[in-house]
Image (tube, rainbow, N blue to C red; front, side, top):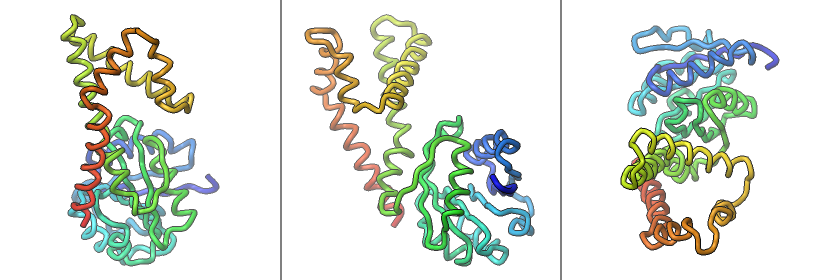
Amino acid sequence: MASELRIGLIGIGKLGSALLAGLESRAAAQGLRVKGYRRGDSLANVGTDHDVLVVCVKPAQTLELLRQIAPQLGAQHAILSVAAGVKVADLETASGGRAGVVRVVVNTPAAVGHGVSALIAGRAATSETLRRAHAVFSAVGTTCEIPESQADAVTSLTACGPAFVFQILEAFTDAGIANGVPAAMSLDLSVQTLIGACEMARQTKRPPAELRQQVTTPGGATIEGVVALERHGLRAALIEAVTVSAEKARKLGG
């Protein structure tokens, strides 16, 4: 970066802690100066001391916190909020309308550096605001930009998605145990199988159907399992899970 980026992170819960650790690990190499603020810490000088403020408090507390610090904020600031369901227009209003605001849909794997963060830019956000947002959230995974109209769909896919994957992992592990594999080994093998398959998809960028066909030989063991999954509606169940979660996210967001 051309100059040191001063980042203030407000709220040191699980996600805040992960972000703080990720940013601190990159601080020297990327020209970052990072400070975390816990509950009870003074916020009297956050506007003066920081260019970027990452708001990681609970959604119910987010707008009130922004109203509290709004007098300190100007066009030179970037405000990044991870509050689930809090729309970017409300974030802008609460922060005074001068700073560039980005709403971020982030998921729990950010806690281990493998999160997905979708960035939603407010009206006053500039290309520099977004560059700063990418710099912060790339510290805990990958980033992308989406319009707010896609927020509920992306929330169901990425923020709710880990729960669906864990449920699949649980079933994989139980299946191994049921077929005689020791429990700890079954979990380890299931985890690595999912990681390997996903990494293969990521690196090759081939359609999942094509990758599945590479494993599925005519008359073999795999096709028997694939047919069983189709018979029991795995594909339909996953599609419906993402769809109903998106509908619920839409209702919760008003």
